Image (cartoon, rainbow over all chains, first blue to last red; front, side):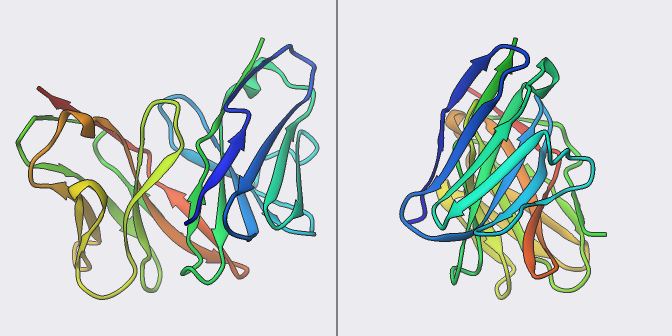
Length: 116
Length: 115
């Protein structure tokens, strides 16, 4: 199998606080994980590529100090939205690349973040 | 630059009728093309992919897609639509940057199957 989970599935927080979202590959090792952001009625936008044991690579226009990514193990990557503001409210989706499986990506169920 | 286009924001079809969701692509080299479905407040579910080989690709839930190189299209099809097929569908192309695979998604097409 190739199951990816995300926790939490939804979170509501106050403006100015930080929120951590976890992405786990449950039954395979993922050397690379990806973080996407999806605005209502829009497509997924790649935010960053996370490689285990190294710094994440951020897409143009994504603030790396705002969206902290840690990929400490082959099965876990975390995205921390620091000092969240209402404009950070969005649906965040991670995916994990399964090596040797034609390098396909498997997507998590997403996390809906609402910043009040 | 590699990209995909989904020209229709929404497609309406009656239950039992055939459905088509359109996708065109622009890539350099051989395209790796994908279709995903998204239900409300859920992540993406893989439907099917084209890497190489037969131009007609069969996937999950009775969906299929036809790769047409001359028209640079990869339209998603199903012979008989179900109300439960109503969802948001994304076409994607995979590109390689610095040895890492990245997916570029289309803007999505909302499929509405009417009972």
